[in-house]
Length: 140
Image 1 (cartoon, rainbow, N blue to C red):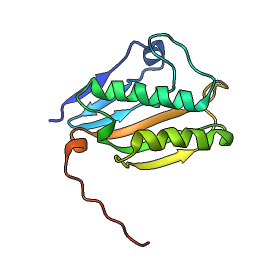
Image 2 (cartoon, one colour):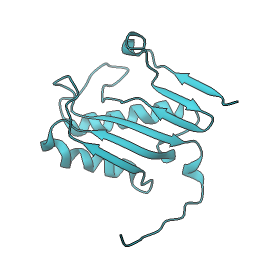
Image 3 (tube, rainbow, N blue to C red):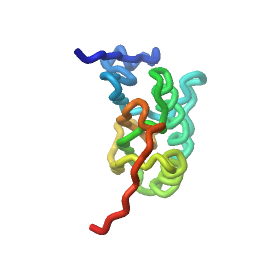
């Protein structure tokens, strides 16, 4: 039988909208879309790249709460509503995932609130960041 852990952070939207920040099934970890609001100060920058950096910090903290980290991420989904923010945001994404190299989907789609400039969702497998990784370069 799979062990399931559902983690909430106290964000009022988690209860209002009935979701968990992360759900862990054995070693698989799935995160909800995460924005760049500082959970302690409740402040959200107006700048997309700063929102991206904070969202990465938020996701990493959620992963660490269940014995994981960004190093274990195997899939990421990035949403950037404004195409004009793509270059600055992708620099942050590239810095945070350097050497981790998850599969990645990046879309420019509305997030429903004008002040949201970035959201991040990840799938991780606990422990893969410390595993020996085979890297291949192929011609497609």
